Length: 487
Image 1 (cartoon, rainbow, N blue to C red):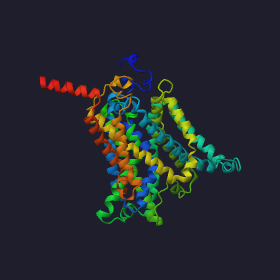
Image 2: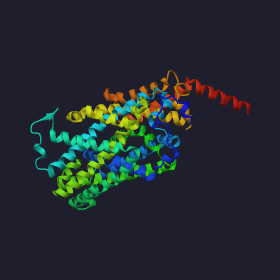
Image 3: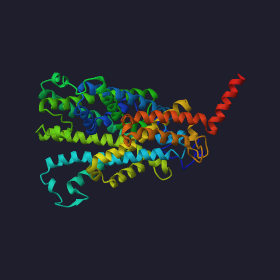
Image 4: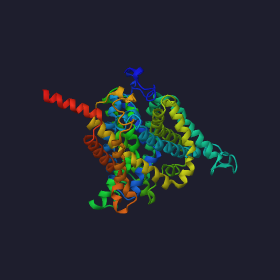
């Protein structure tokens, strides 16, 4: 690649393809990324919540298996371009949305990540606060009645300390993230392994746990709940499906990212789900009600050392998922917006600072509404995946002209840097997938919003690109047709 011919407003060191000698990530690194992302408090609560709504343990395992296989397929497919061309997500989508239009879905993805970064950091800090309360008698009264927007000094200090741990990992770049995930993800098995042992003990063995019946007895009763549950699990990771090229660009080979993501999904997801289901169902057998809050479970151990080790491990798990899922993406997205001034690290620092301004503890006061809001935005990102799949695999046939992705007046400029076809397809996909949230009779569409959004955007984009192809594609197709006639 001749970098002197690239537009400085579209490129910097972090946005250019990764050098071959820096592409060192192997299968285990990708598996450990997913260990770090999946093995955390919110995922545990999500899996446990399926038990709480009345599903049997076996039905929940089936939900996780189906969802993880679909996730694996989507991640491997969307990660293909990253591994092949070593480019990050915001550069990759320039081929479909245009070299300037790519900023719109990238920033939307970054906005969701920044909001979630704040929420995850606050959630992790509450566990850290519990640890400090156990080891420091005066911690709870520190600062007296002083508070900042409703958060007292101990909570604020815990939050800032936990937030700082995330920034510290970011400070050392993508290589340090790789190393951190290698040990942070597997470490969680120590805590959840202990919880599984405890659950089996109080329930009298695995038999009573997995013999629990479902309240959904017929196929008709179960089917839609099952599909909606699969969609919900996928929706949690729908954003990471988009920016998986940010990680696969460091892959040693295509094979490494495909194998690694299989070990991570469905490999570790099924194992983690087994632990979550066993603990939640075990508590239901023992106490008559499922306890799906992992922090509540810890209260039953009554041993300061065990609680301390468990809290520290859960904090590390929270840092792990936060850095991988909620910092890497906005770091690249902001660098893509102002490449001359913002590098990957600077983008990460800006994202981290912006997460403080979201005042996450106030958002958590109305957690139902904020999660619904972020879920709606996340649902709108499903169609972006549909456009990406359609453009790369159908329109481009897995072939990109990488140099053109960094030129203001190149193949992917379209009209003034924007490809209207991608935006129309995204809007239609988002409209159809989200309309059920506002029209009760169409709620079934919202229940499977990710699938609906991806499908409608996928079909619409292909149709628009065929009916009104951009000049570059039209010229190429004319050349191919002429060659075929000549032959």
